[in-house]
Length: 125
Image (cartoon, rainbow, N blue to C red):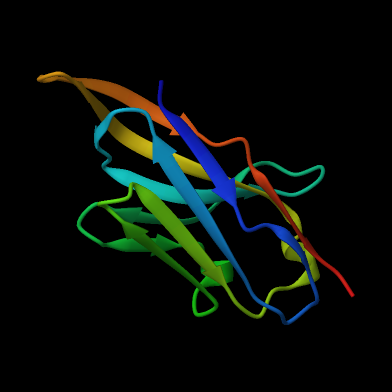
């Protein structure tokens, strides 16, 4: 069973930094895209950043220049370095993996996309 587990959330002061991690597990063969979304209280979930297996990245305009997404394909892990955090960025941050394939014995099967359970980031003084 494929699982995504986030870590690294917590309380940080405005202007501070945090690094989120998300590790995928469960007999994974490959993952196409990985990314981060966030959902603030009373708001819809929104894209933060994505990174393809080849390394190309995409960012929401609001985080460009402050956040950096990266991934370790060998570890099926994606990271989000967040700098200069703002109070309005307080949210639950969710990890996302798309185009997941698993391998059992010699059989490779496409499994679709998965979400983590989220990690809370609170930006407050």
